[in-house]
Length: 431
Ligand code: LLP
Image 1 (cartoon, rainbow, N blue to C red):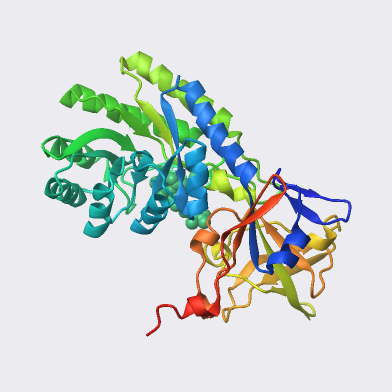
Image 2 (image 1 turned 30 degrees about the horizontal axis):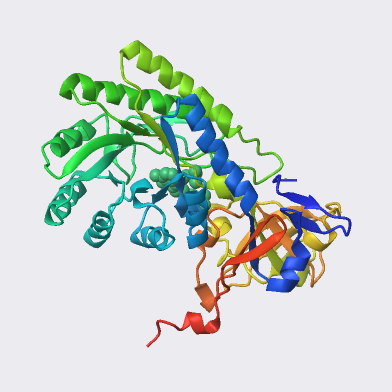
């Protein structure tokens, strides 16, 4: 099985967290997102405990909530005693409404609006991660006008591009995010913040990419970031108290994917960090990590009902489902690959090549192209796996399609944490 929360029961139905997926599909209708809360908690705990262990209590995991954001997930993070990363006023609002402690919120974004900054400062968000000089000035000004001091981190481009499987070191990276190191822009930003009376220079941050399986780029990023920590200490006599190494750890979408155990990754990076600190005589800063996909991705599936099956001889067999790019835009955006199962005949062996198509008026609206599946009939339940990250959070109402609900399963209990949208919801803002 692609995820350890999935299994097959005696009726030959797919189960998630021990619960029958077909029964849940009958109960809630399709399309339906189902997530296993125990696996989410286990993943959060792995990061939290490994960071504690390998950094002697001086580490913290921040769940990158862009992967999946709703009130319930912030409550889970609060209970698991983690921090969170938010990247918009909307994510921040949701977290605050879920009573998530503001001091453990890190606010990111390459173009935060004044309203968003004001909202964050008014609510005493723990850290703002500054992206550029102009923004730094605005944060200082807004903090001053509210009579507050804001603790800032600086988003740094470490010059490592890990978006492909093969990571490459580049000189000047082309990215809309953060301050460049090699041009001196990052150092200028730190100096400028030191002279701002409403800002406190707390740390630096980097994020090198997503769905990465390789350890080396992470180690390399840690080294580059420590080079900068040392430079700041040497040139400005300022100690960096927090180093945030971002997220990006890969998960299993296909049988062939082979992610690194997260604790192993944390251990490997911690060795690099301890070594550098000792060699350079640096007091180890607090180490933060921001996993998103690896917390929720494998914990989620999407269940659809199969509608028409269209076999175009010598061309392609299309299996149409009652969802598509509106609930999972990752194929149309990135040609992402997924594994799927017929949930009501879960151990049936693959026997034919099919393309799973969504119901939008858009030829590219596919979920998977030319994948091997067992014979699929109209009325079957199709489960697409590893959809817990960047599916619900990237869903849309294209073609006025209501968003599916999210059901969380935990210890044999199923709970709706996001309701299914209704047609009435769709016209809520129409005048
Ligand atoms: N921290 C920062 C600053 C980020 O920009 C991101 C993701 C993360 C943490 C979490 O990365 P993760 O652990 O989830 O890889 N929509 C794309 C993924 C975009 C990721 C953007 N930033 C997808 O569906 O693959």
